[in-house]
Length: 278
Image (cartoon, rainbow, N blue to C red; front, side):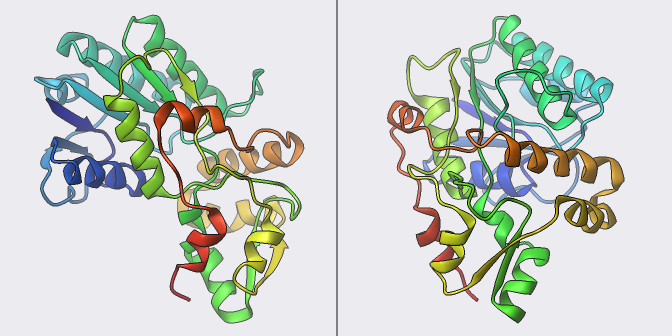
């Protein structure tokens, strides 16, 4: 078996590649730039280049696909067509598609949601053996400078969600465990799984676990800060997902049924945070 990991130089794709390597599997790491995880066979290319994507899939039996933080519908559609065609040509046995977000039940007009919804629909419609993973919010976001800075300096955990909103926070390492299970377990084709911690935790409780105070950051202020790093279009798309989550309080809830199917036990969010260096 050969496992292709897309976006393997990123935080999430890198975690998946390292988990598969730790399981003794053969990993091909697709990156646009940046180093592949040690032990993986690097493949440099761009998702917009159909020939490169097809070459990356050549001889691949299993694929982990996560799209970059691009939300232009036409660009994402091109990426997905290239992945679809390459995966069909390779005859992959399993393709795990990580949406990077939970997706509301109905269409929203939010690009970060709808480009991923259409991507999953297109991959399934092509007849590919797809398992779709929909994570909540990553615990590793709390290590980002814009969160870790105030936490270290002021003992304030600031995040753009309501303080009383329960969230099934998930670490990148546990995403990788879920992806490994989704790639290798039988009978999961066609499933859409809301992965996350077994128990949802509020921001207030998460901060209290490390003796800090939670501050519900204004999503507009978050968007402005993120814009300087990611650009205004990407920042606006991401901020809209937080605004939506604040209104749809069930979106980021725990889903024990998904964990049971995958057989994974993610870390409790408070335990994960308490174990991080301060």
